[in-house]
Amino acid sequence: MIKIWDWELGELERTIKAHTKSVLDIDFGGPSRDEILLASCSSDLTIKIWDPSNDYSNVRTLTGHDHTISSVRFTPSGTHLISASRDKTIRIWEVKSGYSIKTIHGHSEWVRSISVSLDGNYILSGGIDQSARISSFSTGEGKLQFIGHDHVIEHVVFAPKSAYPYLAALEGLEQPVTSIYSPSFEYVATASRDKTIKIWNSRQELIATLVGHENWVRAIEFHPGGKYLLSVSDDKSIRCWDLSQQGRCVKTIQEAHHHFVSCIKWAPPAASVDEDPATSTNLDLKNMRGLIATGSVDLEIKVWT
Image (cartoon, rainbow, N blue to C red; front, side):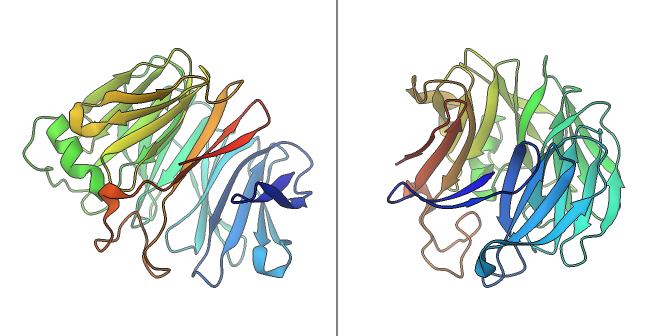
């Protein structure tokens, strides 16, 4: 099932009987703010698209993967969906038609997590083969590979542009080095069952390893202002890493949940409905606190300030 909540009141607004097996990931997106859709993926081998403006009706079901679908993301344009699966592939789908237009191979094991660059030109993926990969959205061709974790990679994210000055300093540079992948991306981060978070540049170089969690690191999230990185773990904690202080852990909530913390999302307030908090130059992002939502095996969702 999928549940829709009023986070301010903590009230359940709606339950969607979505899939016949476990729902493993969800994502909101769409071609415009007036056409927002919800996508979900499942162990039942399907991706479903839901229309919030029409009573969350199921408008499309996408089939094609041969095993559990673990991650789904809309592209920034909202015209396509990217999915990752235990069948070792990544698929690109047309939202409007529901057609699978490309299958990307490269991982040798289950692909656990995917992320899409801000301009939609590249896909970052990570999985059980302990590698993270960059693939071209347009061709499906593998471009970069990040090797260094000692266990499964659970989560991968592109760093926002606001983080570039802090990450450049982290690797001893006065300013970020512009690579052939600019302006799509310059840095990525990966979280692993080896209890570490690693930050990489677009030259495939490891620039930092963040150590502190006592169990698997399940998910990571950059603050839109770029200065901080948040992480959650099977050690039940939330950690905040200050990238301006060589990635030092500056805050730990030890018992954030009663069980493994499995996911985290940062949702800062937007100054305007026409601006994206992650990319806008008109917002004072460094001073934005926003809200954090975490989910856990303890069956609770918590919202933090």
